Image (cartoon, rainbow, N blue to C red; front, top):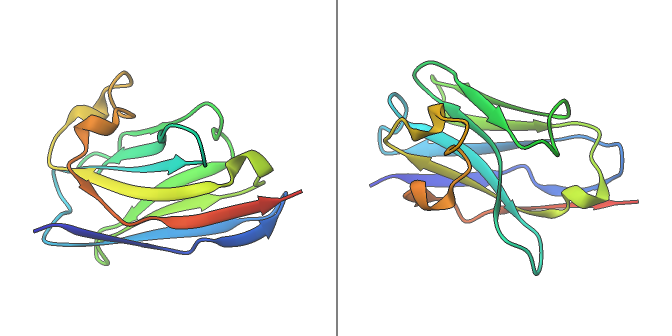
Length: 129
């Protein structure tokens, strides 16, 4: 059974930084797609970034390119999302997701929510102006 636990959310002012962590249990690292999603009140959950663990293929939403960085620490079985230059529009609940597949190597599929079978509970990020 795969479990994902996010941490690192909080409240910051615009222009600030946060690093989210997602600790995975259940022998998840290897041939896995992992991603970060976010959902603001009244909006659809959207893909923020993804990484294919085996070869490091990464994709980002246009809205976060150049500001957010997804990375992994295999030894700690942890996924990170470093967020810089935060904007009020980044305010959302952030979720970690995973699936034992290779779909996230495709630029057309990495952000498809339905592809991910495992989800964390989320961590709140609030950015004030």
